[in-house]
Structure formats: structure tokens, C-alpha cells
Length: 228
Image (cartoon, rainbow, N blue to C red; front, side, top):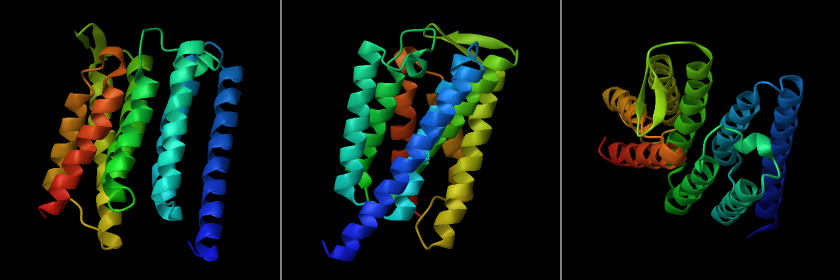
């Protein structure tokens, strides 16, 4: 790689690391200020971590660096799940492998489509980050009719939030892709993807949705983009 390429990768990696450090500081601050609301700091990390993917896209982070970082992050999540070094990340009040599944899904998506199809990776990760993140916060904070799926509580407000936020995220990504000349699904397909995301998020046993939602949405985005 030319020297200019290495310098770009170094600067890009430094900016991503800076964002993660800021995110960690914000999460610790939120947890310290509102200790009775551990879910707030956890969801902040959940949402903020998803922003790493479009950030890496914009900075042109190469495949090897992105994959290595994802593998390390997933390994750290697995170790933390076992040792509880950072209990706030795992403090969900139920047995869940969600943080590991989230990291594993990002790693797999990078392996499949980075850097050739960054929009596909971004579609899956951003829907999970914002859609599931906000659905969890709002659904747990505001009372609404609820039901259980495989022993996991799902609420009407959380489900609607997942659908609407997923739609907004995917519409934004579609418009971005069109603006920069990248293929993207059409408007009807984007609406269908938001509904699929909502349905996939219903099956959350052991945090399974943290893996199935990013993979499912990314795969469908990729296939639908190729057909337009």
C-alpha cells in the first residue's frame, strides 16, 4: 500500500477509535448520572457502536483493518459476557448473548461485503443499531399492550418504533446511495424491508435478534439492490 494509503488508514482508524472512546465516556457518564436506568447506557453503546460502520465507509477503512477490529470487538464482548468486567453492557435483566451476536453479525457482514458493498453492511447494522436500540428504550419506558414470543416480552409501542425507525434509516440510506451513484432498493422494497426488520425483531430469545436482524436485512438489501 502506498504511503498515502497507509496515512489515510491510520487517520481513519484513529478517528474511529476516538469515536469509540467518546462513546465509552458518554456511556459511563450516563450510567453514573442515572444508576437506576442501566438500560440507557447499554442502548447508547448499542446505537453508537452501529455508527462505526458508516463512519468506516466514509473514511475508506480497508477490509483487513475493519475485519480485525470487528473480530477483536466480538472477542472482547464474549469475554465481558463471561467475566462481567463491564457489567453495564450486559445488564439486561435476562440471559442474553445479544452483544456477542451483534459483534458476530457485523464481523460476518464485513467478511461478506466489505468494502465492495458497504451499503449492504450499513443497512443491516444501522437498522439493528437505531431500530432495535430505540424500540428497546421506548418500549420499556412507555406502557402499551404487550405479548410474549418464546418467553420474551414484546410491546406494541416498541414494535411500531422498530418498524418506523427502520423505515427512516433505510430511506436515508437509499437516498444517500442514489446521491453517490450506488445501487439501492426502490421505495416499495425499502418499506418491505422495514416490515421484515420488525418481524425479525420479534424473535429475541437469548438475544438472537442481534444476529438475525442485521444479517437478514443486509442480505435482502443486497439482493434487492442487484435487482433494481
